[in-house]
Image (cartoon, rainbow, N blue to C red; front, side):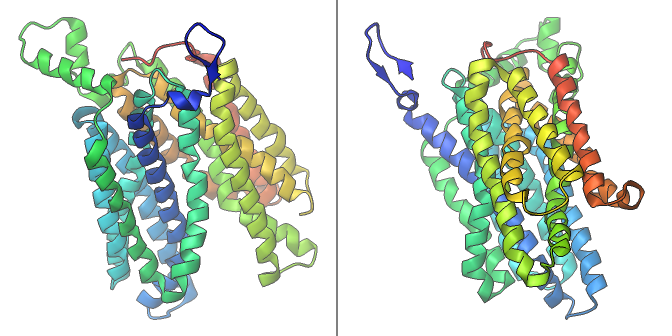
Amino acid sequence: MAEIGTGAAKRHWVRDITGYQWLVLFIAWARWSLDITDFTLYTMVLRPALTELFGGSATLQIGQAGGLLTTIGLLGWMLGGFFFGIIADYIGRVRTLALSILIYSVFTALQGVAQEAWQLGVFRFIAGLDTGAEVMIAIPLVAEAFAQTHRAKILGFMMTGGGFGQIFAAQIYGVLGPYGWRYVFFAGIAPALLLAFIRRGMVEPEHFAAVKARRQALKARRDHTDDDREFLRIVPLQLFSRNIRYQTLVGVLFALGTLLAVWTAAAWLPTIQNLLLEKQGITGNAAIPYVRNGMTLWGIGGIVGYIAFGFIADVIGRRPTILIYTVGTLGVGLPLFLLVGSYDPYPILLLIYGFFVIGIFSGHAIHISELFPTHVRSTAVAFCNGSGRLFTSFGPLVAGLLVVQLGGLTNATGIMTCFAVLSIIAVILGRETRDEQLPR
């Protein structure tokens, strides 16, 4: 609750949000949710798409091509985050977001007209560049728009778009899937409608406007101090400067710990559930409702965890909240993978596990964005997350390779979950940012 004036009257904090802030939040949330919608739909239609493009050839060939195309898309996601993160620190968050939406919409729809597998791969890579860009732009945009107003709560809510994206994908697939995989890709043009909202009322946050004004003023002068010259350096290089490199280390460690835990789980949880169900005599199509239910509960737990993170972080601080979520990830994840031998407790455990292992990603939006000043914030968020994605993309592969040595997929996944400890190290090394003004 937010108290107004000197009297006893109180009103809900939501009423403090301006129309401009609501617009920023809506655009960022919608764009993030549509990115996850696209990624989920892609996994749903990849097999029928390749079956048609290869003319129904061998399953092995389709599987190999599918793995390659997925890797290409993820590579585009990672590189796009780096590239557009840097661009956003130069030309602005709003303009970069509009550009990424336009490119994403066009090349996602173009996947629906691909006549060869290589064409699908090219379109997927370019669409992936812009998919990876969105959250790297949205985080600093929302953080700066809400710099003085309930920043942590709002960023936590923005991150729920990822959870809702999976729900949206299921509904879109149910409607368009029967018409064929091409129509599912054609739905990718829909995000372009967001450009109408951006053109009508979106302006750069004051924090970035001040950075732009300072850059212009410094370029008009010839005499520069050491601080001025550092401010004008190429932005990616500034992440390793004496004043910022420590925060960069903390951000990368935090991203690594969270991503290694969640990516491995996300990749193998459906398979693990199927293996447990087979022990109980539930196989094939009969297992589908169980796995779907488990993954849905995992996602719902994540949505609640996203929102709760911001409220908890405002009360007890960012670092203690990250510590709680990390301990929860380990405390639920390790027994889930190493001790549970039947499917029966999985639904409730996945709900709780999702709260911690997915919900902690609100910390990426809240804590990492608060570690860095405005003129490098978008690049820093992109670098920390992109570095984490680069290393953790091997997590599911490593878990798969360790299956034989460690005595099963659940053991291997449990071992990979232990890397969440890196987030605890980040908490120990990092500083508390709850009571700080968002750095300019």
